[in-house]
Length: 172
Image 1 (cartoon, helix red, strand yellow):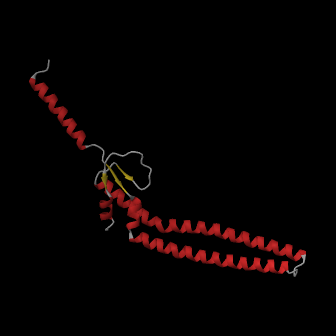
Image 2 (image 1 turned 90 degrees about the vertical axis):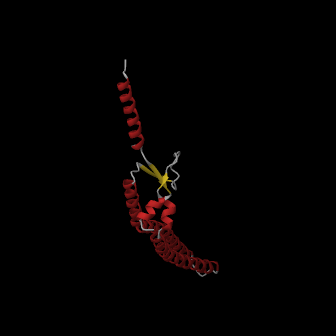
Image 3 (image 1 turned 120 degrees about the vertical axis):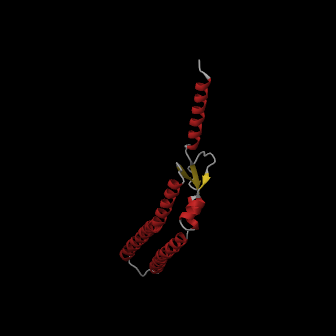
């Protein structure tokens, strides 16, 4: 049988353990990384630089396409007028086919170059944000911080939105 002192000691131990557990419960937070990224002046600068880069590639593509269309029109006019021999027509068609393939390759390469440039411009910004998130998580003892903009979350209990803390860490 337990005496009153043992019962009291057991009760105090149980209360102390519950209190300690509550204090050490894992802490979770969330933020919208997409919204934060859009707020940063660095992102606007990166997007402006990317637009200039993409516009140059688009202008070159437009120039190549117009020149190709003019060459096709010229070929069709000469062919229909009978100014080209069958061998000349066949040679010119092959040349135009090569031109068209070169334009298509340029367009594919341009898309890859724009994607690469975007990654190059955004990488330092994302590193800066990631460092700020890690610092906030460490300083505020968060076990996890979720990105609500990615749509990867299936369920989450209410947690703290740490966007304000990350913005403060970034000096916003």
